[in-house]
Length: 348
Image (cartoon, rainbow, N blue to C red; front, side, top):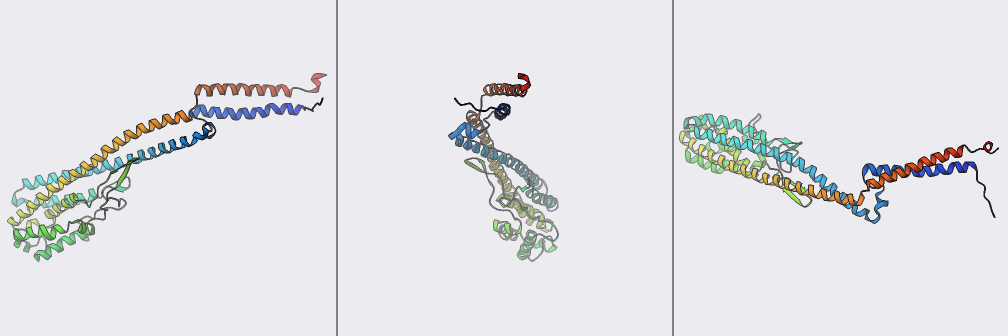
């Protein structure tokens, strides 16, 4: 028979060693009660950890798209408001044009159109969230150069040069009264209209990209979520306003003015219909974003339920484990206290 030496110190240390382990387990159990998930997912799930990681990645992706959609929706709301403002300007100009007499059109309509031409540039240069609404892909740069200003803008210089080339006089000069209706019609449908073709527009008026923003609104879905100042309705609207404000209507003969105002009315109607079309297209994108948000919310609910099944702990079981560990720790402390009282004097 063999005996081994046991010291009082080893008896004291044994409960203390066990207490450290129990405290670590208690901390883990408390964390699981608070978070509702396993403290060590890898240990608890084993080979199923990869499934948990994949589900979490899907949920993170959906959360990121949802955040982006919130910003996109703000941009679309601001764009729709700007389009509505421009359409209201079109309607007012048409009403003023049709209500004014032939004698009034040269002054009243020209003044109103000049103001709205400046407002058009200001609206097309509007921004939201640090991005220009009508710049297309080039969202960091103001899209439009204002027509009026000093020194004269490239667009104004191009219009006045074309007018001077066609008629030999400047817009608004006394010599413009000799321009015949046929000459003005040929100019408006030819050299003047060419100034508002997209190739000329991007060289004199606009720094916007002709490509619009395509946003990812769902994991497998994209939508057009911006407009560009290079679109035909904006160019047509600018053309109408320049006809009214930049060709010196008051200096033209009554018959020639009638040709110009007829063209202005036609271009305004065309621009109004085009603006409504852009609003409808962006409205469709807004509806698609709402639908995508509803689908993604349902997906996130399903993912949360699946993650709960994989990672979740039973709160009642975790609470029972805490109580058991707390009792064991208290017993360990009590035993340690009793052992510390052992000494040789107690046996004498």
